[in-house]
Image (spheres, helix red, strand yellow):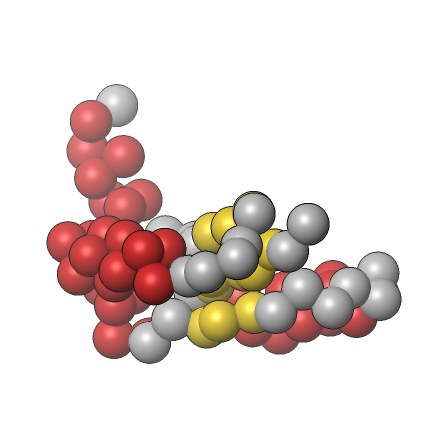
Length: 77
């Protein structure tokens, strides 16, 4: 089964350390940092990446507060 990770660059250090500690060879694509503050462009970028992948069975998307989503979540509670 072929997998790939699409990740926010803010997680780079922790993600690479976790993968190394498990001897994982899953390829990681770090998304451009400028997407971090705009959820619309983040969604568009992720969808384009997904659509462009071939021969991939599993996609892991690792984000943290990207698109300032935590502000929207707090505002709705």
